[in-house]
Length: 154
Image 1 (tube, rainbow, N blue to C red):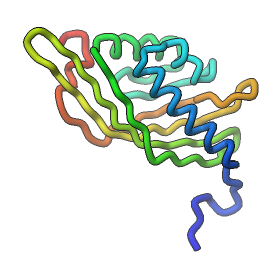
Image 2: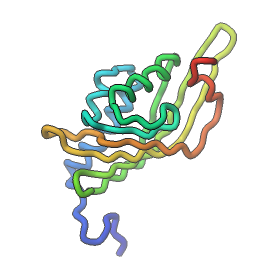
Image 3: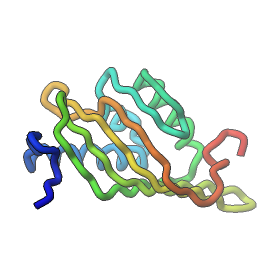
Image 4: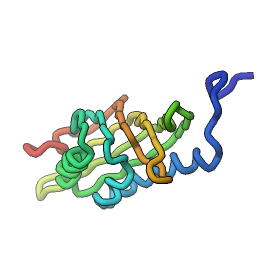
């Protein structure tokens, strides 16, 4: 019988699994509502990110500012997360999930859309009793539409 966890590893408890999934969903909801304080609260103070549209960042405040610069140009975003897999890691958890992110910008002349599908891989740690993202990486698998709406020039 196949196991979802490496031999010898302890799977997360149902409570830990749910807490990790809720953390990822809380981040998506905060981004779509443009609640930047709530976005920041999803990350550890010394978190880092590798995101295709904002690059590598070792300072979480700079990452939030870079994300905000992109998102604030748009009229709406909607991040759909699914297929959450949570594994226990040496000092926390590895949490992966699929994402389909929709981005829209309207002008007097047209409405432009950019949608991508990908996978987030988060290293999650416990900080003062709560789970926080220590490192986030986004792998974009596919996209459609006009990616220029994410840049200042469009």
